[in-house]
Amino acid sequence: MEFKEYLAGHREEMTEMLRTVVEHETPSHEKVSLDSFASYLSEMFRGLGCHVELIEQAEAGNHLRASWGEGKEQALVLCHMDTVWPLGETKKRPFRIENGKATGPGVYDMKGGLVQAFFALKAIIDLGITVPRRIVFLCNSDEEIGSGSSRILIEEEAKRSAFVLLPEPTYGPEGAAKLARKGWGMFDVTVTGRAAHAGSEHAKGINAVEELAHQILKLQAMTNYAAGTTISVGETHGGSGYNVIPDLATTKVDLRASTEAELSAAQDKIQNLVPVLTGTTITVVGTINRPPLEPTPANAVLYQKARGFARELGFELPGVHVGGVSDGNFTSAVGVATLDGLGAVGDGPHTVHEYLVLDSMAPRAALIAKLLSE
Image 1 (cartoon, rainbow, N blue to C red):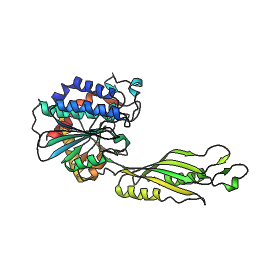
Image 2: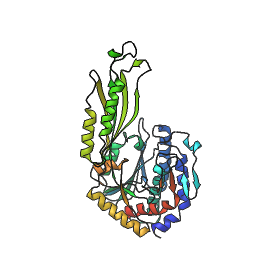
Image 3: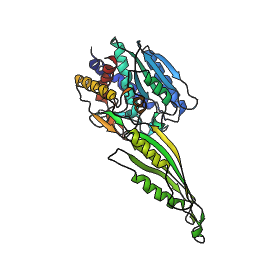
Image 4: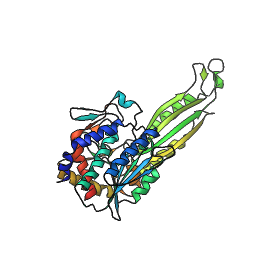
């Protein structure tokens, strides 16, 4: 029996596991819920005969490492367990199946992909397939908030691996793989001025909001679509009332860039903003969170193999470049062949309308199984 047929025969099991993992809420900042979910996954992997290690964290949720097979080399499957949704979201939007689509918090990003990858390994084991290298799953708990406690683990595990597969959501209705991702930086800009009464002592004040307005225009003007660099000014605060000239104003800045050079150049500009108004000061705190996932030759080879396997399984695997980030940014940057976006087919990551196409789960799981076994 081939992977495609085996996994098609396990569609109901995959759907039930999907229901279970969606109903088990895992907000990034809820350690108790994340630890419980990691324990559940541990038992699932142990049920396959895997060696399982829970990597305990003091504040973040525990991470999980599961391995199966032998060999000097290993292949890494990199997953995240956390979602952007708060506790109680499943009461508002419980797991549902309608018109061939599954919905619920995190179903698309990325619990569907986690289930597909798990069943890819189950298929390899149940079918008695001899794999050329050890298979390792690393499931972290903080991808959605920057992977602060897991980045070192991810990079170390990647360096031990021949290649890395990420069952993050695919892109678009065709289910495209993600061949490149932008790098990401986050910065907090604070402007200080001088407070004064807006009526009787207007001339004595130095308006921090006015200065910040100048800086916002500068920042937004740094966007260069041709170079693949975008700056987005987000949450902004300043002032305390109608009649007070504000002495403080703040804003949050999101930076994305397609190349390391562009990312570094934009970061330098953000960190060296020059005041327009005399008497104001600007403080910038923040840094680059993830380097770009650039389309390296090694990544291209891995993608072409996946594309060929997909055709054998009866579907096309287009590739796209996206602005969002993942932990694949880290693994590619340390020089390891990485293929991202092998997970669920659907739409709506981080939105209330996210969904997963159920018919896509078995063939996509089969693709992961073929990549791991061949």
